Length: 270
Image 1: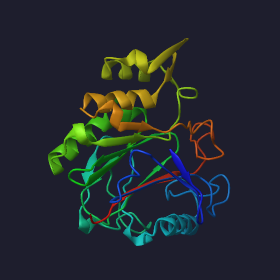
Image 2: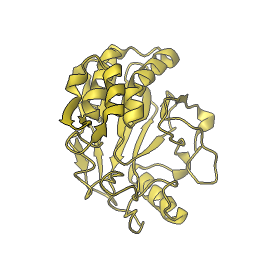
Image 3: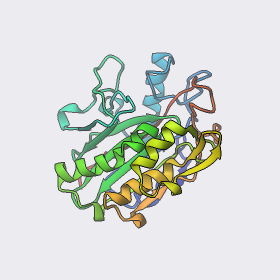
């Protein structure tokens, strides 16, 4: 990943995506906002208990950094499910402000220019997908439920159906999310992961006593490969959100009281 420090606040980009001038993407950190602890400082979520005026100010700052209008942000109410919503021009701005209704979904796809998509994270895995042939993009939210439910595969298939995207030409980016160094799950989650992935040994390591280290990076990488996205087209972030609470919010490391950092992706006219 590449870090951009110019302007009001830092953000990160993926090397395999930033070479496409028609694609805008940014992974924001927790740095540069106005929210007070435990949401300090760039919390972009309305749903965690932060003051609404602070979240709005933070979203305005993030948009200003990217040259966007906050009212153009298009977002969703994330519920750790597998629903995927195609976003149209008429959806532009839905979820930008707290007074507007949000659809329930954990992945958004669009081929509409100037409809920037926003999702929020604090350990769950961001998944960005880009089809450079048909100029279409997807953004997904994958915690353990989304990972074992293969929302990565579902999003690829949704883009195939909606835009005629070919997985072999798609690019993908994973993270930042909680790493296997910090993500320990119990037998119930491990059993679901074993059922979901034939190569589950690559993503699960037993610690004994019914505990397992679960690697969301490897699991979602395997899901994308099974959907036909070439491994060489997938870039992973080199961050664990639980280890790096100086840069990112972490639900697990911060005992559930924290903010959400944002990922924004969007298309411009080519």
